[in-house]
Image (cartoon, rainbow, N blue to C red; front, top):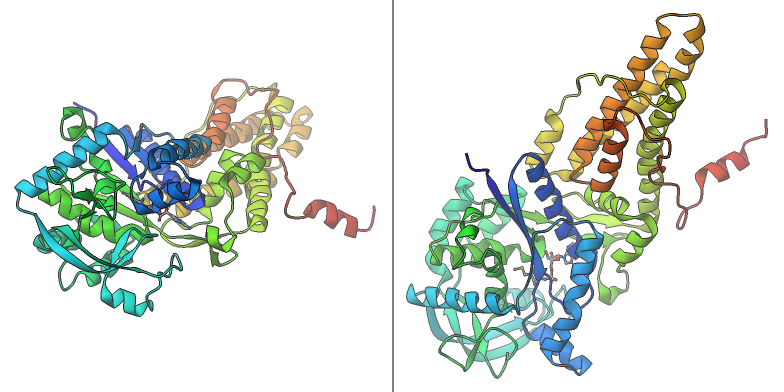
Amino acid sequence: MTKKHAYITTAIPYVNGVPHIGHALDYLLADVWARYRRQLGRVVRFQTGVDEHGNKIAAKAAEQGVTPQAYVDSMYGNFQTMIHALNVDTTDFIRTTDIKHKAAVQYIWLQLEKAGLLYKDTYEGWYCQGCESFITDKEAAENNGICPDHQTPYQRLSEENYYFKASAFTVPITQALESGKMKIVPDFRRKEFLELIKDGLQDVSVSRPAKNLAWGVPVPNDPSQVMYVWLDALSNYLTVLGYPNDPLGQDFWPADVQVVGKDILRFHAGIWPAMLLGLDLPLPKVLLVHGHITSGGVKMAKSLGNGVDPMEILRDYGIDAFRYYFLRYIPTQDDGDFTWERFEAAYNGELGNDLGNLVQRVIAMTLKYQAGVVGDLPPNRHDMGPYREAMESFEFNRAIDEVWVMVRSLNQYIDRVKPWEVAKNRETDTDAEAHLAEILSTSAGALLQIAELLAPFLPETSRKIKTAFSSSVVPNDFQPLFPKIYLHTEDQRASKSAELPSK
Ligand code: MSP
């Protein structure tokens, strides 16, 4: 029997700035799912990459006095560095300036043209360069002519473009969304999108005159036109797989899960499925839509100066601390907030005290009372249902909550059975030795279980715990997990003990 395949994708960020936490969230959510799928035995292909075309990038390059190509060549490495720094285990990284990608996008264009889905028309309307998006009159009026995300006025365009007949696919796309053949998670976003297209999908402009947009994939057989950046960018999900030439890729399409932010759902739920149907390809199974990260309640944005550098967090607290916070405190399907104080409190309290001390305690007692010998591990009795259910419904934060229920109950168990008291009785009570062994092996077994469930979220921590407990003797040089750090909050223990009368 052949192994089942799974293809997982992330949105490809524009390279007009350094990577930020929003991009990190895309990568992390996809990584959790990829690791989870691998744990369940799937062969995974996991795409990441960067979006390098379009006016926004050309403008940035011009600002810096370099060619767009030189500019993107200098930028994409920052994204690879961040992916690596986050321990995101990808199989593919695409740049939309790759020659193979560009050739495949031109092939896609020709296929759509052959199917009679492209026509020329005049576009008279609004454009937001920040979003790289054509804006309807209604939307422009609602926003008083200014993009709410970028705080810049919309441009007025009057130009001849090629249009893609997305409207031809209103019925099959609506049906796919209604029947769950293509799922949007969370469901309220599916409903929102269905409401948006209730009067039908609109045809979309998919090219711009070369004189207005020179930085993009040329339209085949028409040098006066360059492809719209979104047509080029969305195609990446197929070109990564070697479409149209590589038969290997066929095992991976349709995608298992495509991770996108809420701001770009409409491209992924409208134009993207229309392109796929135009190419006679199946639709992705799931679009997982995450929210936005705010800082102290305000949307994180470079222009507001409240952005947080992911590399600073990684440097000060480490990879798994970063992953923990953004996967638990930013609810998978909604907006969430970051503050340094909250981050550090979660780090010291949950990772340091709840988990780190627990592991340290069990190792120390195993060394002290049993010369490090772990003993026979009992079968796991914890109900895995709620964890699995949270994972399968893409509520990763809730899955971590479930692991923490186990962490806390193991701490409570140890506090209740007091192995140190049992150890004292060994001289006089013949059952105490066996009881102690049972407590410690139960604890080791539970920690191994916790490590297994944490693997998609905190891969390094999981590996360390597994290594410590899966050989017959625990190590006597185990480095504490998550040692305390107080860079943004006070050491509560120090200030509390200062308040207490000395004994
Ligand atoms: N280039 C397009 C995507 C093309 S996909 C075929 C684009 N790039 S982007 O850089 O603007 O955004 C990339 C991803 O980062 C999107 O999923 C977006 O939602 C996410 N985020 C950008 N800022 C964000 C936050 N503040 N919070 C969370 N994610 C957000 O759109």
